[in-house]
Image 1 (cartoon, rainbow, N blue to C red):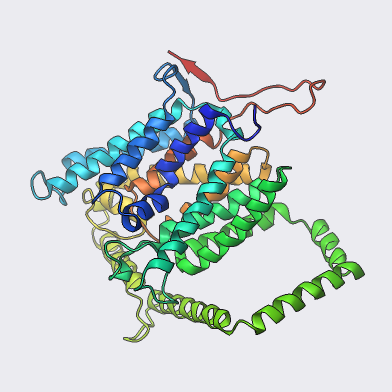
Image 2 (spheres, rainbow, N blue to C red):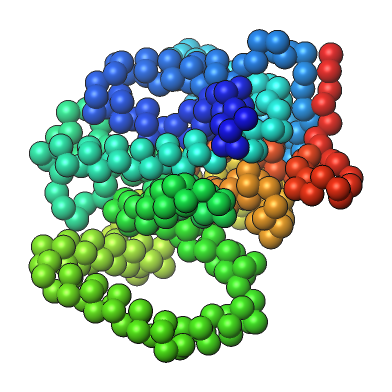
Amino acid sequence: MNKYFNFKYSRQFLGIFIVFMGSPLIFFFKEVLGFGGGSTFTIVSLILGLALMVSPKELFRVFYKPFLPSYRLAFTYLFVVLINFFFINPFYGYSANSSVFIRDLVNYLSIFTFFILLLGVSNEVKDYFLPIVVFLTFFGSICLIYSMATNANFIIGQRASVVFGDGTTTASGNPHVYARNAFAGVFSSYVMLKNRNTFWKLFSLVNMIFSIIVLVLTQARSILLGFFFTVAIFLYYNISAKSAKIAFKNIFKLQNIFVIAIFLSGVSYFISTQDRLVSIINLYYDSFNVTFTKALLTAAGMEDEKTIDYSALGRVNTFTEFKKVLLETPWELIMGKGYRFLYMDIPILETWIDCGIIAFLSFALMNWVIFREALRAIKDGTNPLTTFLGYFYMCYFVTLFTGGEPYGIAYWFVFCVMIRFLGINYLQRNSNPLQRKKQHISPEITS
């Protein structure tokens, strides 16, 4: 059997990928290539992903235990949210906006269906998922660059994204999904670099560099913040004083200095002959610097008409509303003011003002448990699947405080994967057949 391919497990993880990481590809096929109209193609893609996860012989017969601490907290949170969704719902009522009500109902059904199917996916997918993630994140980045190159309305320096509609409204795209795709590309490629296959090592290195470029082009501040946060965690667990000292000594070996000098000379010469490239780099640097400065000034209340950042201002205003409730009518935060009462773009607080203290505590504790297990997976680094998921979750952990809504499937599809695979024990393959090891695996429950 090929070390990197097994039809059943590769098919199942492809289905998982389409559901929880497939948005960049779905947007590209929908908006650039014209597949499907409205949400039709998205729904078809979701159904395809769920169908690929199914193993007919094991469907509803074999289940694997998720990580119970995060599972119980997630169940508590969703139970409270659904009570609010059906009975304490000032946003929808029962007739004001039935189409949006149905949309959210379908979203919750999708979340539960995805999680149930995840429970039927074997732990063995951990050995076959990496090539899928590395290749498809690379393909997602290629799709973004192609969209930029073929969009006559795209202006060098603006945020890179696959735009919606005919492309005339360039701000209508969603750069965050491509930034997350690039984020996943960087860390999946890093994990893939540890294997011995030369082709995959080279491909992973190319994907890592390409993903970093795309991450910069999207200018998604929250994802970039998550990236730097994750890199800091990586350095903390992987760089010791001893290893740093050894690396420092190696840099100043004569042959290494010579190689570095040649490399830097080549880079300097190339840049000196590429005025267009230099101007593009400066343009993106200036654009990012301006938007980041505006966000800081707006958050600090020091903005004026020229430096205002409307995205950050929206969070400041909604936080002011939350603070008003907290200081003037704090008892309303016990039960919450109702489903989707206030869109804050700060998920960790929005769930509190909408659905009350129980929802807030269960949501916060669930993410703390997942965060703790993600750190453990990164530190151990023994399981490629959990190592990748540990790094990938950090992107979402940061955005809990910077953007999105706590009810969205963009969050909950990811939470489902984390609850299913992070924190459980896995069967570890024994490279030495003469050495006996105690085997641990997430318990299989057969009906």
